Image 1 (cartoon, rainbow, N blue to C red):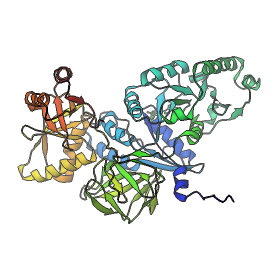
Image 2: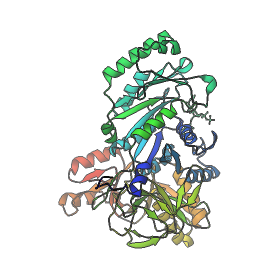
Image 3: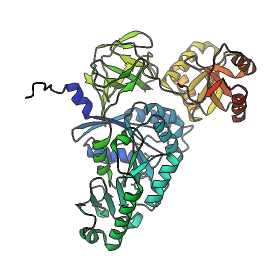
Image 4: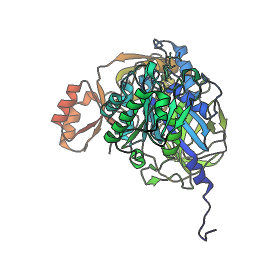
Length: 536
Ligand code: G4P
């Protein structure tokens, strides 16, 4: 043994085993189906259909049973963990429904990479665009999976162009489809240099694969026919001349995105995707805090809360806070510091998540998510450490799309209402703005559905009643300005009816139209307006 040989620490081994990622897509592109197939490979579930879709059915807006069902499922599927080829894979669920987009944005702060699923026929859709934009802002490494190749869809090269243009990505195809829809014959895996044949009768099973060292090999013609083989050769030439070679470093920096084709429903191209993912996707990454960059391999535990879920039993107001471990080993019954409150806390039954259950764990490692029971201490974005007073960069809020005044409808329950609103905002269900002028409260949400959820939950969990009143607001703009300057004072005087504070006491300008925003920006160039709560 070399004199300087030092055995790899157990912590480092655990870190290197882990891959924590999210799957993002527009609803119906195949996220649930793909998740299920990945879990099947990991042996985490035994049969298809085991993963419940957390989709909200159309027309469910006023169906509270549906909302409750949804909440139940979203706890169950929040984190799905499985083992594959000696790796521990954590899939963080991201709701596709646009009314829950804020939830997805926050979850994206806890992933180390993502897989983007695109429907071959529909191409790039609205939710995909929004979510990819958030990933690009954070330079999250992305893999693209083009799904439903068993159906007629867009031409592969047109689709690659569309992905580049609409999503602003730099793609590198690592597989190519051979035919499509009824002519779909299989996939050429550029990464592994083999062809996987699509045999319809072998649906749900992994098809046959043939490996070639040379693309000119006539065995290819025998397998897929001369015409298809000639097309494939031409297309591969095109790939070589048009696209750069895959560069893992660029992928890791979020500057290049490999693309795979397949059919999740037929379990086709999924193993290739998973194998490439295992090879290239990042292990848990360092994270920036207000003091320094925290590395996963540091001995001391740090982590942050990215999601809070209210307990399903309305009589007990305990909640489950989802903590992503950034560094060190998290241990059960150890004292940790909730930095914002300066409060020491201990957790006797932290949960780890698996594909089909959650269980109490003694230890968890960077990349893992632990679920901590909480009676109201945590807020989204909170940092927990072994004692160091550092704070991870917050989780930004985006401007809501809808705004309404919230009024108390039962004067005897004012306290309950205040508490309920406070806790629901901590959970991130919606955003609260308090008008500077008169203290009136305004609730901002991403979707109209949230208003009904809030009203329902305030009544059933807190015994409080509320009503809403319309207010004509277009966007919330977080204000950055020198509050002592004459310019700011003039801005504040003119706009006093529209100034409010958010939950963190940040100043917000509630603009009534896009035109107002433009005019205000022109008139007060030194009063900066941001559409996201966190700015440098
Ligand atoms: P989502 O989570 O992204 O919203 O999508 P999900 O997986 O639920 O898939 C949406 C629909 O697309 C489902 O059909 C699913 O079976 C289908 N699908 C997924 N992958 C493929 C594929 O590779 N090929 C084809 N042809 N279809 C695919 P559904 O009829 O809406 O639901 P279900 O009743 O079949 O569950």
